[in-house]
Length: 165
Image (tube, rainbow, N blue to C red; front, side):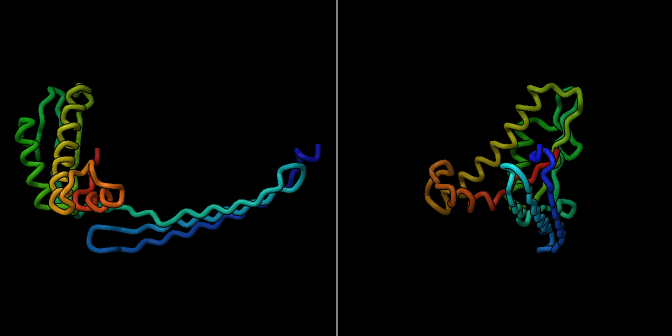
């Protein structure tokens, strides 16, 4: 019965700090320390959990392109009807122009068909894939898929997927 009445001490310290880094980024430190000690039976334990800084983007100031899918399965690119081909071309030039500082607002109507949503989403990710491949060839003389993880991480910094739905 002593195991059921184990005494527990839990100490939790939360420390939040925000730091502006550049014009468009914010670092948020969420350091959480949990210390617990249980007495009795087989449950003696001490645990320490620390979470490290979380990098959080602030998108409000970034150049934005809006891709909206209507209930009639049409694409509105910045409020103008566009074909998939035009959307791909405009998105590519937008990403080339703005690089790391961009935001894609991807909005869907609740009556948009799921297959159309998937098609458009695939087009968006294909644009990113093409740009990452080009950058990998430019820097490493290899396709993106041939790179190791460290090289891929470096290439990913050129075109981060800043997409909000």
